[in-house]
Length: 185
Image (cartoon, rainbow, N blue to C red; front, side, top):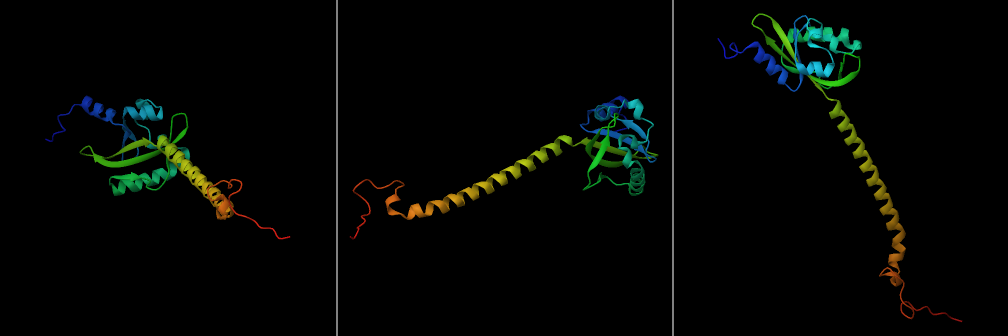
C-alpha cells in the first residue's frame, strides 16, 4: 500500500483543480477520461462534454489526422516530454477560436492501464509581450542609427567652424580682437 492509496477521490480532484494549467488525462486510444477546472475555463467546455470525447476535440480541425498519428507514436515511446518542441502549437476553444499553447505530456498508469496526462498552458500573453519587446528593440535600434547619422552629420558640419580660431569658444571674437586681415592696395 503506497502513501497515495489513502487519498480520497475528492482530494485528488481538488489537487487537480488547483493546478495552474489545464490538465486532461487520456487513455491509450486518445479518449479524455478526466479534465480539471482550468480546462473548462480555458476551452469553454463543461467537463461532462469532454469526458468520453477524443482529445482532438481540443485541437483545430486541420491538425486532427496528424495528431492521431503523433499520439500513437507517443504511446509507443511513453516518456515525459514537452510536446512539439520548436513548433508553434495551437488549441481550439469550444467556439472554434484558436490560441497558442505549450503542452507537456506525462505517462502515468492506474495500475492496469497506460494513461497520459497533458498539461496545457495558454501562451498568448507571453507571445504578445515577446512581440512587443521585439518591436521596442527594433524601434530603439532605428533611433540609435538615426542618432549616429545625426552626430556624424553634425560633426562634419562643425569641423570647419572648430578649426577657425575666431570661433574657438563658440562665438565670434569681439570687435578689435581676433585675426587681423591686411589689405594691400
